[in-house]
Length: 119
Length: 112
Image (cartoon, rainbow over all chains, first blue to last red):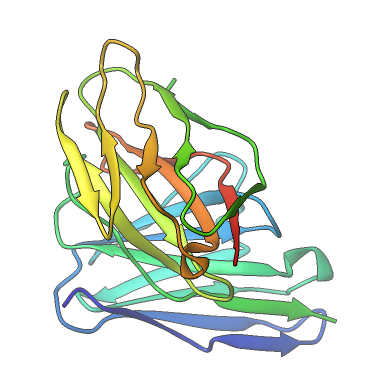
């Protein structure tokens, strides 16, 4: 149980275009989903937290107009990288939690990640 | 603020050697502590967790004990295998926000 999928697993796009990444919880309802960015050989950096039906909460330094997050249902969240540039190339990972934000004891279940390359 | 510090890698061991990866944290409140593992090209998988002081998390031969007095959550395994080669992340779960704060990750390479 507790499987999270991401699509696509990798994508190459041209500079200036937008890319959408989907994150789905397959066998549970995810009240909260998190989006992370991971640079090569580095730790995960939390970008934003999204709760179903409400606006995402972005971490300091993350441009909300560039990284659009939509949590349309209890099983789906999307991250859209708008007007992508080469510096946006990275490994993007989502996670899903079945509990409401505010409970530090809820586990997060991670997707396999999406490799984005902007040329 | 909350933070997690892991020992720097890479850690290279021979098969059947004893493994320790150190993890210390600073936090307010009563966080939960986690170890995640990331195999090459894959996402993170929860390895084990502990939700309160003196709890021991264990899975697949790995263990870690939540030590509040030393603010530590060191990962140990008595006999590593080649298949344990991966990146290991220590993480702290905020009791207020549910967010996870990760350490920088430690790469483990086990040689036959």
